[in-house]
Image (cartoon, rainbow, N blue to C red; front, side, top):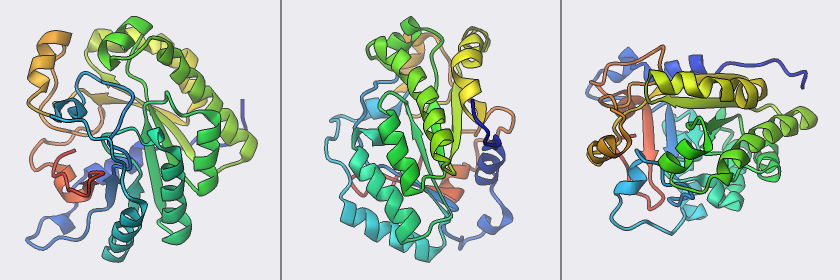
Length: 273
């Protein structure tokens, strides 16, 4: 399918989730990475996502001039990595996304710019534009073992389940044909042991052959709202964002407060992930 050497993202993730001694002081350095919500909008309504907790769903994407100003300040402060996403789906506004990547890579020369997507809008053209702009890492979230679970948990039409799978394959082809230096990854949430067993055949056929690395995440509570969703969906989250399975961190002190900043589309800071 391709000749590029597969690369790993898990070591990179573990370096971010590990709180180093430099951050255990009253005066701490800038976070290693910052995730920036280019768009607060999302075409999914995932059961445990804290987007669902917003009383009024925002519709205004981040102003690009504001994005340029804050990322310039971040670069000067010592931030090394920019994630062009947070809670919303950045590919809801592909032009803004591409401009943001280009600004961070070509304008500010950030060493690492990354993106996570639900995959449904990651068309070959959108992916190509992101890679041309200099994107270093593209990760797909794959969290349903069939179309019925997809419809139940993601809260959208079943056909997007298959669209996401095809977009992963197309992204691999785009990278291989274009020779872009961008890692392709996928993660899945381990709702429970049965979920991992049920989804593995899907991953083996439609995901793992087309990414550099796949890894597992625990299901964690993003808000108090999750308690209600536990009862509705039958899954029990762990406390806090403890990183990835295989390298879990203690919930306290929370690594996201120290090593990864989070900026909403309206310019507000989020202390949590």
